[in-house]
Each structure stands twice: as C-alpha cells, then as structure tokens.
Amino acid sequence: MAKDVDLVVVGSGFFGLTIAERCATELGKRVLVIDRRDHIGGNAYSEIDPETGIEVHRYGAHLFHTSNPRVWEYVNRFTEFTSYVHKVYTTHRGEVFPLPINLGTINQFFRSAHGPDAARALVASQASEIEAGDAKNLEEKAVSLIGRPLYEAFIRDYTAKQWQTPPRELPAEIISRLPVRYTYDNRYFNDDHEGLPVDGYTAWLERMADHPLIEVRLSTDFFDESQPINKRALAGTVPIVYTGPIDRYFDYSEGELAWRTLDFEREVLPVGDFQGTSVMNYADPDAPFTRIHEFRHFHPERDYPVDKTIVMREFSRFAERSDEPYYPVNTPSDREKLLAYRELAKSEPDVLFGGRLGTYQYLDMHMAIGAALSMFDNRLRPSFS
Ligand code: FAD
Image (cartoon, rainbow, N blue to C red; front, side):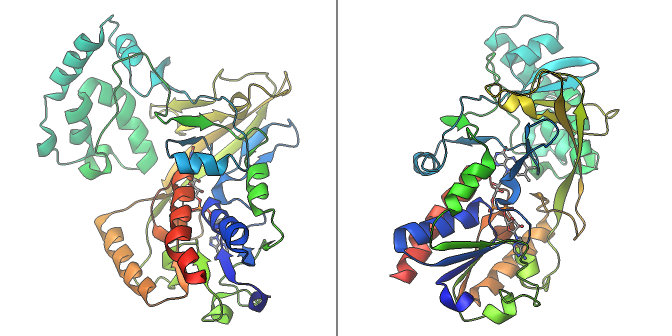
C-alpha cells in the first residue's frame, strides 16, 4: 500500500524507471511504480513477435543514441549495446535515395558528380529564391534553406503526410533547420554513441526495475478511483513523480494540449528480406504511409528466420483524446495552455511533473533519462535528505 512507500512514480517509461532506480539504489527509498498499461517501459517497450521470433518495437522504432557521457555511463549499467548504426533511405518516384540529404542524395537527384563546394553552391543558389527571414510558412522556410527542387522531392509531400496539412498552411517555425551534409556520410545520428540493447529494450527496462525496494503495479491508472493508488487517495500523503499527460492531471481545466499520433500496421511476409534495410521513408503522396520499418535489420547479429520477415507501416495523424499521444503539436495556443498548467503545477508541492507527457515536449530516450537524473539530483535527493 502507498502508506508503506516513500515515493509513488506514475508511469514506468524511461523517465519514471530512472527516478525509481535512483531513489531505491542511491537513497534506499521504497518506491511504488504504477502504469496504466499492462507492460512496463512506456513507448520504448518491445516484444518478441510469436510467429517470427523477431523483436518488434510496439510503439514505433526506437534507436538509442547519445553524446551525454553521464547518460551513456548510466545506461551501460543495465544493458550492453550492439554496434548497429542507423541509416534511413527514402523512396521518391520509384527511386531510392539516402537520407539525411547528403552529397550522395544531391548527385543522384541532379544526375551530377559535384564535389562538396559545387554542391554547396548549387543548393545555395536554389535556396536564394526566398530569404529565410521572409518565409511566411513552412514551405517558404524549407525552400529558403535547401531550395525548391530538393524541398519538393524530399520534404513537401512527406511533411504533408506527417501533418495532414499542406506545408504552405503550416507555420514556418516548425522547422529551424534542414540538415544537408556535403559528404557521403549518411549515418542518421551525429552522436558519440549509438546502438541497440543486446537483449532488447524490455530486458533493459526490466533490469532497471529489478530492485527489492521497487514494486511495479501494471494495469493501474492513477485516475481510476476504484483502485487504491489514485490521485485523490494519495493527495498529500506521499511524494509523487507524475509522468502522465499534464493536462489530464488537472482534468483539462486549461484546455487540451494537442498531439499527433501514429497508427501502425504490422504484417508478417513470407520472404527473408523485404526491403534490405530497417527504415524506408515514402516521400510521395501516392503511398498513404510515411515509412516502413523492417525489424529484422535492427539486429543482423541475431539468428532470425530466413523465410519470414515482419514489417510495420506507419501512418501519422492528429490525436483524439483516446489515442496515444506521440508528438506535441505545440501551437502558440498549446504553449499558452502549457504555461497555465505549469502555474497550476506550482500549487502541488508534493508532485513533480516529468517525462515527455508531464512536460509536453518531445524527448529522445537519452533526454528523458538525462532529465530524470537531473530531477533526482536537484529535487529528490535534497528533499529526502
Ligand atoms: P513514456 O515512455 O511515454 O512513459 C510514460 C508512461 O506513463 C507510459 O507507460 C504510460 O502508460 C504511463 N501513464 C500515462 N498516464 C498514466 C496514468 N494515468 N496512470 C498510470 N500510468 C500512466 N527516442 C529515441 O531516443 N530514439 C528513437 O528512435 C525514438 N523513437 C521514437 C518513436 C516514436 C514513435 C515515439 C513516440 C517516441 C520515440 N522516442 C525515441 C522517444 C521515446 O519514446 C521517449 O524518449 C521515451 O518514451 C520517454 O520516456 P517517458 O518515461 O518520458 O515517457
């Protein structure tokens, strides 16, 4: 029961588990972690597909990468990482190009053999069509950064699919930069460290929770008053770290924060290899999905079946309240609401809000873990000592 614990953590994603692990291991505190889902790990959760034995990331492909030495040292306490290096390709008009846009993409697209300086000059002259400061919408901003031909091929229709909105009708601030590399390097991430957990995300997440002072209760919703670990019952009785949606905590009193969500369509195919790579984007409007993940390619070192593979098509749309919230839309009206919720949060001295849902921001895994380590140092350790 909650009266026997020192801290309740709502949400067993990377943020909540990092808090729980630190408070148990470092401070000897008894921590109860609850999650409304029937598994731990939040969106990083992965599972073995029973038909193929292939590890599938249920909530979308998760690639670990970081340049933060503290986070890298911390995560290595719970898992080893493979040497997987993430690369992404895109299909445009029946042709496959490497991403992010690099010298290979440019030369293939323009049927040229430019060196870095010539390619840079070409893109700069095409981008000069619009001054970045004059851009009134996302389309103009993108053209001002990379020029119209590359924008129309690789950004326009993909972005329209992501946002269900033509880029001419999206605000320019959605993008501040569009990376173009003037080398043939098409590593997706620039970080010092990257890789995938050797025995999967769920084994890693379970090891974080594997401590005698940590209890995890699944299928337990913090707002469900028919079970004892709920908001009303706990109010003022125990410190809480809350990593669910901040607007839900305050019963949407300041309005709903807008999110985009994803729908995933999984399929087992009777072939050993469908697309030859882990992620293929689809840049054109004729494909309704944004990308296809093929999970076997995340672990080439594993002994997966040679006659079956599993693919997942990803579709993007605005979220309803009942959908999984994935990416904050972050309009000016959302930012106003968030400020109002932050004010309300100050009147809840026993509750700390954290993680991507509790702070309404997109966080990569290393950022969620880093933010939790900072909350532990700056708020929890001092308050418990
Ligand atoms: P979450 O993982 O969302 O955990 C929050 C938990 O709180 C959930 O388990 C939820 O069920 C629980 N919860 C919510 N409300 C309640 C309630 N009322 N009661 C009880 N429990 C509740 N990061 C990367 O570094 N690399 C990637 O490649 C990458 N890919 C991504 C792809 C997608 C599609 C998405 C959406 C995210 C991706 N991320 C990636 C980000 C990564 O998922 C987050 O960094 C991580 O999930 C953040 O952890 P968290 O604990 O803040 O939130």
